[in-house]
Length: 505
Image (cartoon, rainbow, N blue to C red; front, side, top):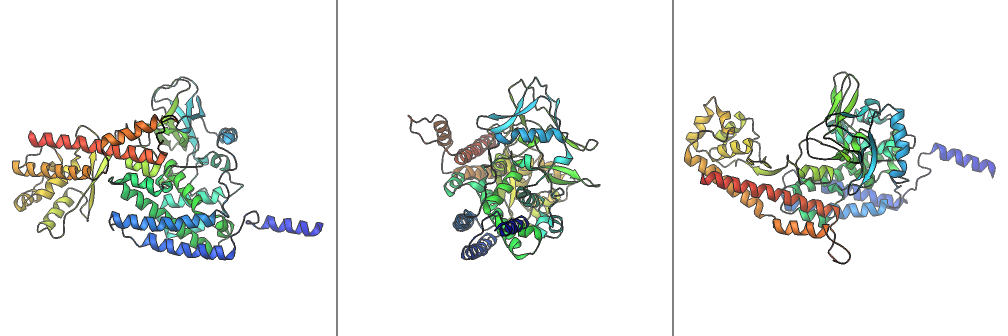
């Protein structure tokens, strides 16, 4: 008995899946069939099938994913064995051991934020707070698991999509019990609020918003990637695949993708300094606030350096600014909305019809202006005192010109003047342009099924909900969706008022 037991233990040590449950053969076959269906559904829509078709495909793929997750629930392992707070001491020791500098800063819990960075002393704006050396940043270059580098250099998806490669590498590392980054991985969030986790009724809250199409495409893309990697894991003989194929789940991949989307930043690698996405321990625990970029990469010190966004007193939360992103981008890629976002925009789609007799001239003019001219073009309405951006204004002017006006500007050396709001143009053309913009903005605002007042009331009622009031508290996803559509309506309403002033001037 003793020898048999010893032999069995030795076999378990040599078998990477010995401590992991396996699916019965018939369940694995069902899962294989579902993967084929998911690949077909998520690959059938071209980029411009229309919102109705996108929603139909999303609903169909959601049904497949629900069954996939039901089957995978029999084999999935918990991503974390203890909560984040319990792992902090080991994480902080690991940071210090590897020369991360963070004087006057600690990791703390904050209401509505989960973990964040807290000041432990008076901090002046622009003073250096964090220095994170390159050696502990997680990139695809760092994943030293057997076969990964060979795969990374041969698979077209991984080569062409660095963020996807980083997410796949993160899965590999998360499943590696001896990972160098384990102290860091153990303090990463267990859950995210990216659109990958939205239920159908929560996605419906984005109805009317241009971001609904972006959200559906994001879900479609990640589901297709999951299925692609599943097939790759089960059809290739890399040792790496044998170690992780039984543990590969949709939930695990969504977690990895969400981790990368919400936390990655670009850093230079190699002699040529090519920029690659990276996860930066500790730095990525700072929560977002509108402001200016205060993070830099020191070539000399080979480290990411973060300086204070503003003055801080002991006990205050330290924030970071990610860079200029719209609220739609923040919601889809980061899982939150910032109502004070000064860089917020609303997308407006325009295009020159192939049947337009002046299409060739219009496209030439747009090309001369370095504006997109292929198919439908996405332009922006901005959140500022002049909401009509120069690009949108120039596009609208070209779109509304007659042949004589187009010929004039095509022969002009000053076509860039079309970007300027006070460009000298025929009065009738200018009136036509502003009327055109007014109509487009009013159409955009009209497609939202709710009013601004209704959105504000929903947010206020949820914020003030109690057990006595019996008002339903919004889920984080619904709250973000309502905040997004409200922020977009505010921009559109302000833009409409601005355009009306231009027309009446």
